[in-house]
Every structure is written in structure tokens, then in C-alpha cells.
Amino acid sequence: ENIPTATAEKVKKGMLEGVEAALGRPKGSLQKPIYTRVHLWGAALPTNTPSIPCIFDPHGRAGICGNWLLGSSVESAALSGMALANHIADYLGSGGVRPEEFAVGLHNEFQLLEGHDIGQFPGLESVKKEQVQAYQLTS
View 1 (cartoon, helix red, strand yellow):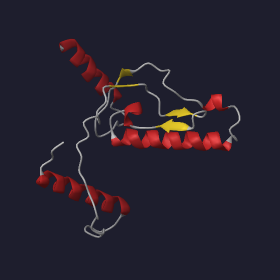
View 2: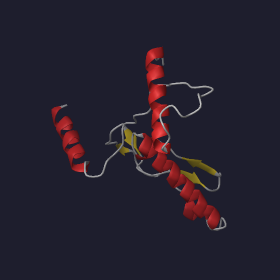
View 3: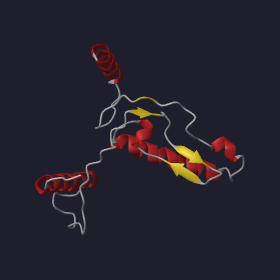
View 4: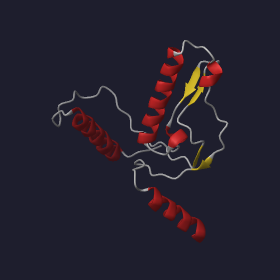
């Protein structure tokens, strides 16, 4: 997607400042990146989800994680990645005995995804449900 140069620079600057803040480093302390690219991720906001944290096939030795499995945010992507990492660690810790017990797949039906692109915050569930119900009644 075409992103104006000024917008890309603003996003890059904000991201780098966020990394500095997260690391407790002073503003402008990071080395200049060798390469950056800002991308507008059109698929970042899924409309439905299987509502499982990760997919894992121990026989095929494949795992899948991503925001679309839990929600529509960076938080959801991170939680999904951590869930897959923990699941793989548990599987390897078991010695690979009874792999069928560790299979997690898409046997769940997809459900309407309720969430926000900045993340889901505890305590807002009832507000979100009311908004969704109001939208469904007026649409």
C-alpha cells in the first residue's frame, strides 16, 4: 500500500521512541536503523476467529500463531505466539509421547470477533457486547 513519506517517517519515529521508552533508554539513544519499511497491514483486523490461542500439529511438526486466532491487536499476536511457544515446550518436555494429546487445530467454528485494534482491556467486555448488540439491532 502506498504510504506517504511524511507519514512513514512519523510512524517510524514513534515506533523507535516506543522501543526506547520500553527499554528505559533516553530519547534518540538507539542507533539509526539500517533499513525500515512501514506497511499498512490490510488483514490486521480479522472479522472472525476460531477462538483458540494457537494451532499445533505434532505429527507434521508445524505450529501457527497470530493475532487472528485471538483478536485483532498486537497484544493478541503476542499472546498467541507465547501460547504456541509454551505448547511446543510442553510437547518437547513430554518427550513426544502421545502426540495426539498435544494436537490443537481448527476443529472450532469461527465466531464473530469482538475487539479493538489497540487490544482488549479487562473490564470492557460488557461495553463491547452492548456496542455490538446495538450495531446489530440498527444494521
